[in-house]
Image (cartoon, rainbow, N blue to C red; front, top):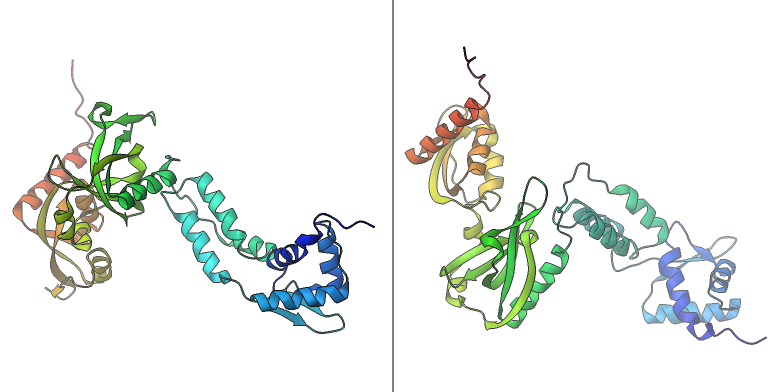
Length: 335
């Protein structure tokens, strides 16, 4: 009987079977391994399988034999342990900047790093309810294009947009292209941001990667090296609330003692908390004064109060009055 053309691939198929079909709870006997190989059009005998398994062990695969009435074999060690894979899948699934379709593709690839049996339990483990995903499918490739510009030391050009109520893209600057020198990417508040030097403005700026479109690497060398060298990314990001632009100020606040952890999470462990009463503390920190910062303060109700500067207090109280006015019933007009 002529040999199958797949016979030369026997050892590779056997390696794949151990990786995909076996784990501690699902070992396979020699008879089952022979049947699995037959599914690939490969014939095998018990004696030859002993030699093949030993060859895979010498190659570095930790194939363990479970001896009982029938000896069974499984792959004991893998590059990633199951808890690590769960962490990776959870990160992909919960990531806002990765679209639903790309999340499904990445998770499918991650699941191949373990057996099909454990992959099923892995898939059932992860479900993030009501997670809002980005609508920009190209972000996955935007990141790659930006890295290409950084690696080549070249400026990039792109168009920058926001969404209208109709969910249509509205390009800023009337659709004109931005040209900047890319230096690094950073992750902040569930979004990827490009940190770049704007040669025209002469300063460092940031751009949300999922709002960038039609990215191209130019032939022009990057500028702003000295600005980037002087940049402390941690200090640059700290004042921002969701990377919202605005005026930077050092503010002083008084808050309920139970919110100490919230403040440390937001501003870092270096923030100095000074007890100011039986159940309150004060602190000061640089922030970008923006509607998002004021919304953060307002979210704590009577447990948070801006103490200084006065300009921030005035802006905050004005915002609160304007917000309240939208909910006040309008006086009936008489005819």
